[in-house]
Amino acid sequence: MRVSAKADYAIRAMVELAAAGDGPVKAERIAQAQEIPLRFLENIMAELRHGGLVRSQRGAEGGYWLAQPAGAISLAQVMRAVEGPLANVRGRRAEELEYAGSAAPLREVWVAVRASLRAVLESVTLADVARGELPDAVAGLTADSDAWLPH
Image 1 (tube, rainbow, N blue to C red):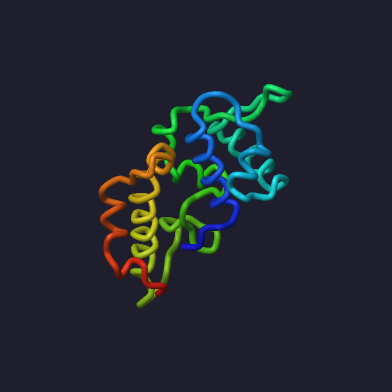
Image 2 (spheres, rainbow, N blue to C red):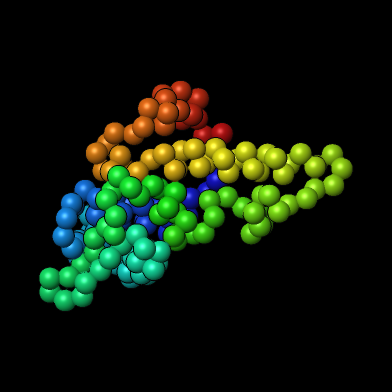
């Protein structure tokens, strides 16, 4: 899986909002804190607003805030809001694919890959990341030294 800059920035911006607590946070503050280009961030925030994950207000007292409690927003929701489905093959959902002959089992492999991504990304919330306390299952995966190898 390749996480795009857009998805990475969206999650980091949302974690910044989660850490800030209640009240609006200016886009400039988020951009500076997370080293995200402001123009790119503004486009991402518009998509997150359209996806119902953030609210915004214009003006001197304006900014962005989470539309739901941080503990109710998973990383998967953020990624879907800016990128669409978590995993697809050539733009198609895994369950829609059909392979011929000896490649037929690949469909199940792609479904399993998607299920694995969901298991992690749906279990981690913005509050978890903001607090620095990942769920035990996720922390357990990172405890395996093999997980850190670049293969």
